Amino acid sequence: MRTLPFVLPVLAATAALPAQSLAMGELILGNTARCTVQAPGSLLAVVALSTTGTVPGPCVPGLGCVDLAEPWLFGPLLLPDAAGAATMAFELPAGLLPGPLGAQALVLTSNGLALSNAVLGTMQPLSAFDDDFAGTSLAAGWQIHNPTLLQHTVAGGELHVRPLAGGPAATWFANGEGPLVYRVVRGDFTVTAQVRSYRLSNPLLPPPANYDMGGLSLRDPASDQGPNDWLHVAVGGGVPATPIVVEDKSTNDGNSNLLLHPIAAPTGQIRATRQGATIGLWYRANGNAAWQLLRSHVRPDLGPELQVGLNVFSWSPTVDVGASFDWITFARP
Image 1 (tube, rainbow, N blue to C red):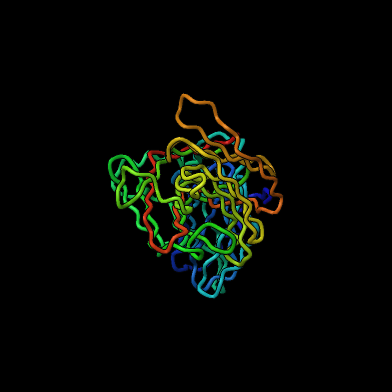
Image 2 (tube, rainbow, N blue to C red):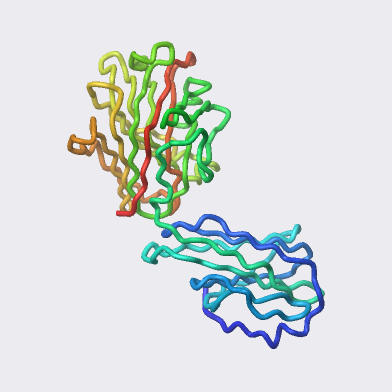
């Protein structure tokens, strides 16, 4: 993007146009932000930004009102699609301070120019994604990968998840993928969660020792087009020789490399860190214990944005595992 003057005289000689609509998505510092213009019949659009915010501004007949305070940054020219929608995606620098961000669009149609509404949002740190699951449903902003494979509820201060199918195709292994409740995170980060896994048929027992677990996943969205690229750290039932484990796994182009680490109980705090190409997967039994680095994985193949969140899965077609998460936190290094 580049700075340009906000020249009003050129815009004044325009005919009246239908209202143009602008919407702005989440504003998380260090993440990708998006402004979407809905302008049927438009030819071009440009979005202006302001860290001062919005104020009632001067109005020009046939053009609209300039309600963006001190616009200083203009995005590139956008080519709307056949329905007249155009999206500007831009990265919010992680080093900015939290605060307001206003936006307003200028739209060109065959009849002339028009201004959209001005919108105002608040730039927030990555910790805005933190969740203690204190409500009765997932907070707005969470997304679910493979939603048909997941049953979830929020109750008692926890997120409770269970897979609706098991077996290789529904398990986080090789070319199989289970469900994932996630946020999209760009760049370096640390994500930490409190988890416990249990047997659905008897929640007082650990899950069956057949790769029945719940934990954290970091998934590259490019896996939608294949091959699969992701990592996870999860606790639950392993194999008969090590029945209760924390697992760390890295899957690169559909090839999974995993280790099972024995633990005393299928519960604890798990963590994943990203620093450049290095992904660290961590575990500790409780908040008073020292963090144990399970393994570091060097993954330069991963894209700048990852789907980061909570998983559950069962290798057995007969599903008998659930996982509950007390909280999850996100931070920049």
